[in-house]
Image (cartoon, rainbow, N blue to C red):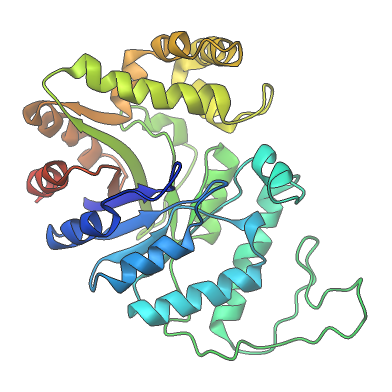
Length: 331
């Protein structure tokens, strides 16, 4: 199992040790470093900064939100970063949710699966650069048919370093995960339990298909306190990252067997009782999707991850000792 460092997106400002941690991960043998975006820091700029200060580690967007850019913009960005980094890019894409897509980007959210299929197909066509690109899709027609009528089918001027840049999809629902196995090279789950893979028993993962899974890792002799941090984060995603009747994070936690707990967490969070919402997150849920405790406990619980279909463990930490400990335990 490979390791990746998830630096994610910023809160109010850039993390103080962004480049230092990326270099530490590269020196420790990590396979990849990943950035993210929501509605603040973008996914591309920090990744380029990391790429300029490293030489071997792969560079992943986890995730680039498709409503933030046209497929052409994403293809141009991917080709450019891949050239500048010497072929290290992994293009992780995701749809986000209706609150961000319609509230922040001012784009329509409906039909996310169909939009994603078109988006990926256009990017792959542009990167292969075999002919000027035309596309008769519902969501991203090329040339655009309702404008001046002067739109011209074009072929990327840049010759991509790799015509097949790996594309991973962020997916939570069963249909989305299945689609990822059909059109992408990998899957980026957000909440995954190696103890409950039967959730995806109807999905066939092809040979060579990658699953890069974010996992919070907290080294501490106080397991309860460590899990408390995970529960705080979970309560925010379950309770606050989505509308009352449309929250994909709540849905996936429900499919894991915690539906009643998830609704309670959401009710408490939306009532302003955030501390109570965090306390309502089941310890079992927090424990299954993370690695918390002393080194020996983390080593023992790593076995479940190594036996799972997950191919890369993405840890978000600014602690050098934790980065090196995981490298030691998985070597």
